[in-house]
Amino acid sequence: RKEVEQDPGPFNVPEGATVAFNCTYSNSASQSFFWYRQDCRKEPKLLMSVYSSGNEDGRFTAQLNRASQYISLLIRDSKLSDSATYLCVVNKNSGNTPLVFGKGTRLSVIA
Amino acid sequence: GAGVSQSPRYKVAKRGQDVALRCDPISGHVSLFWYQQALGQGPEFLTYFQNEAQLDKSGLPSDRFFAERPEGSVSTLKIQRTQQEDSAVYLCASSEGTLFEQYFGPGTRLTVT
Image 1 (cartoon, each protein chain N blue to C red):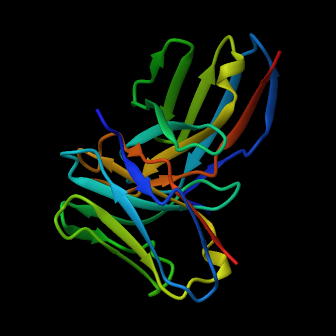
Image 2 (image 1 turned 180 degrees about the vertical axis):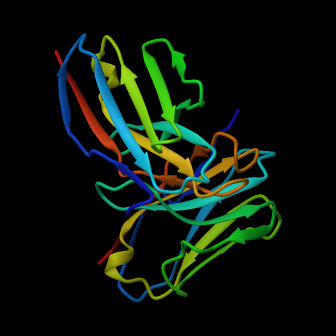
Image 3 (image 1 turned 30 degrees about the horizontal axis):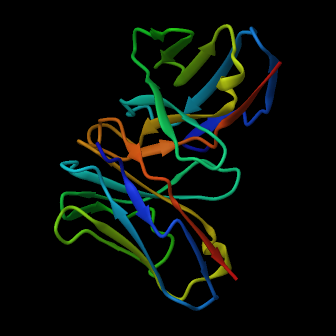
């Protein structure tokens, strides 16, 4: 099983739609979780950290289920500018360990 | 302030050549990471430094890959005797520590012909 698995998509959704991405990770000792966004031919940028209690930032909501080793990202009221690849990221193990990136889920928001 | 910078942005190398890729992290960031990103894939971890110490190099694909950060600031990733499968974007990231947000540079796109 890969360390971080995501549905590669693409997800093609109309403007204003709600879209959800899922991600599973294999190492139960992982403690840090993030969603990064990567635009075409650009570097990844942090979208949001994911906390155990779940967290929201505007139209974006992230959830973590440690028992199922599952992370989700919900985007409400999609905008054209949300079109990008969304990378699920966890740290390799507990403590100060490097990050492991999923392959990413591609989202296209269509007018 | 200035972000992470990388040079060159593009590099074409003939198979068998050696290449050196440079990363200038954000000033004061103690952690520096190198990743390799192939087309359609997420970034794959190569190695990381805490100041000048290389704490993990488990992701380096072969002994042709070597990284250094001698003064705890600028880092160089060197690839010896490049092969076609080395063609990828090499990303550098820095952070205040391994559990903090990583800031990525624009990457170096390496093409081995």
